[in-house]
Image (tube, rainbow, N blue to C red; front, side, top):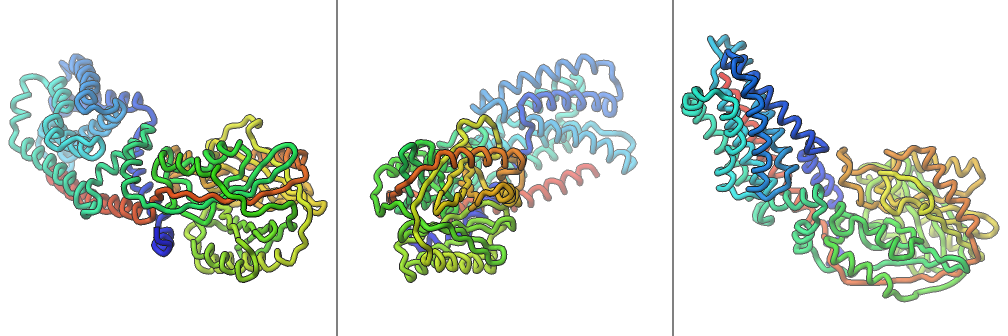
Length: 588
């Protein structure tokens, strides 16, 4: 992939992912269990029948016979729909709950309209209208979410609504209610509107670049709700581009146990279980569960689109070349410029810089910072500058002023590091695999700590397999370490997207500290710091580099999906207004 194109793509890809998630959250307003949806459907059908008998039929003589019949028919059709559509029962049941609620709302609005407009009586046309509105809703859901052909959707759209209608409506009213000209007119209009919507939202939204917006939505839902990544990965891999990906490792070798810092030129994502969403943990496990997998200067343009590409990348980690080795290191240098903070270590002529804006919040660091610092390092005599995005505070896209401050702080750190004395190095490492705790805002790698003993002083670097951090949590950890006489360098997150789909919030994920309590987090890292300190041994290190050709998603692909969903949403909003307007007209 051309580097200039990639640079431009990376500036927008995170926003695109956020917009996709925002659109997707509209489909998550469903009960957590299909049993809850079934209970809602049963309750709503009972209310529909009761209100119809009391307010429309003006008699309750057969109500208690109609209720069990209607519920039985409802439950039976709940099993028939998935058989015909070859879909999960849960989706059909959720759809039924919302559809029946639409039906009930129509019936109640009919009663309200009669009182507001002083009509002589409540006409049963609204019962039929509600049934047909439910049928049009089924057409829209069948075609967009379930992938049913429009003709098939029309054939079966009345299956459940009509069956329930016939179950509770007295038989002598079937013909007059179903042949009412107004009811037929209203029903045809609703169903035609639903059909036009499904055609436009599916085709026009893609603008010729995406053949089917609905196919993307269905693949997206399959991954999020069914753990089925195949449709989405297939779609994404076809649009991905070949790119040479580098990974640097600093392997610390001691007499007891090796550990390493890993800086891959990849980004975790786009979301679990698609592609490289869990790539930090997969690297961690592949490297003997003794690695801190850092977030490089990267964003969703550098996502791996599929499991096959992930496997190809993981295999390449053991096909690396040794660039440098040694046993000496400088003491860390930390520079603060306004909100920006940079911490650096120098291993021979390789500098490691950790950048942070905590506690003020930050998104992925702009890519130009990496290229600027690499060039600056070369001009100052460094062989290479490895840059880590600590990703340890929630925020919006980094503003130019803050980006400039990060550059200034990082350059000052490089200026200072090169003047520092190199000293013998000891390293200790501890992970949380023997700490028995569960945290839903952490990925499976949980947390780890690395202790650097340099010149008689201990310095601690913390790591969390998490998707960013709650603002201020880093400062609470640092303050605790400082009060207890520890030199705390930084805490970095992997930016894993492993648990992104479990969160139904504006971020689309639970940042570290949003569920875990600060005292617990501090306790975990304190325990690990003691273990890492105890495990520290004289260390030699090797700087390793691996390269492999893999497909990455690129920013244009996410932009395409985002714009397609945005266009589909605009069409949906327009049709909702039209449908609502016509619905109000029917009430008049």
